[in-house]
Image 1: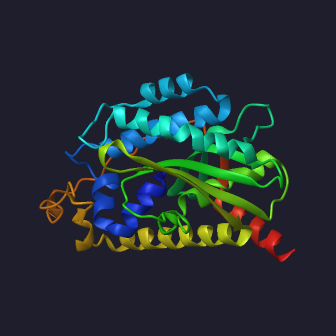
Image 2 (image 1 turned 30 degrees about the vertical axis):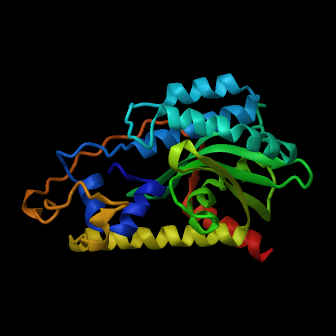
Image 3 (image 1 turned 90 degrees about the vertical axis):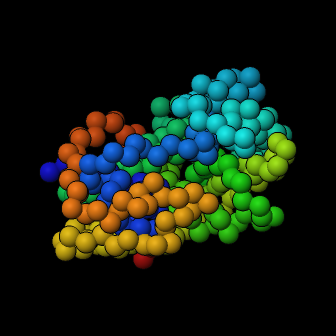
Amino acid sequence: MIPIRLSHSTLDIVNTCERKFQLEKLLISDTSKEETADTVLGKAYGVGVASYLVDQDKELALYKAWLEYWPELETDKKSINHCTHALERSFPALDKLLQDYEVATLKDGKPAVELSFRININPQYYYVGYVDVVLRNKWDGVYVATDAKTTGLNLIDLSPAYQNSGQVLSYSIVLDSIVGQELAHYGCGYFVAQLKKDFEVVVHPLIFRKTLLDRLNWFITLGMDIKRLELSEEIGFYPRRGSACLKYNRQCKFFGTCTLSSQDKPRVREEDTIAYDFVFDLDTLIDDHLRRINS
């Protein structure tokens, strides 16, 4: 049996509407993969930020972001011009960040950027993630798994949007493999470009200190999500959640057709051939963290 691939964004769908997860990941659908100007801009911005943290070369960072901006989905508020402008406005904040942090290196001496990992959960499910960059504090040696983000949220304090997110918390499992020692404390970082009207950009470097218990709790949460998915498969029922029909003023692409279950046809799963930088087993991770917390 080929297992089902999960990620942070996929679990967001599961926790928003199980029926949408079923339609998008498990069944044959005429609807193409959902790419938006927001996600395309976000990926390109992340590549540019990681490049600058490694090389401190503005032109190279802008060029790599430009190359990554694909497909060319653009709106009045999200475009390649918005991406490059956000990156240019981010350089001073990145320079300030680099006064206290440096990019961590792998055991082979390569910079710890754009790292991939896979967590084997059970024979039916696995979880994957991609880390933009790992930083190391120059003064206390604390390592920080960091992700670059763009947002249109009109808030003064963005901490509530990221502090308890499981995304970079899950990414932090690569730190033990990089550092080669048992860390009790580490950080989860979000370097956020807040896009406002008229090309105004406000940059928010956010770093939250975390513990092994925080990561263990994420493992447990992941296991609980899997239990829900297994129950849905067992009884053949994936609930529709009305709160997911409209999100960020956009209608769900399955709205109006998600009730047509008579047309459901299972999708043929394809083998994942990606060579991930790090591979873990969930049970081993949980046992290891319990041992380290209790020691």
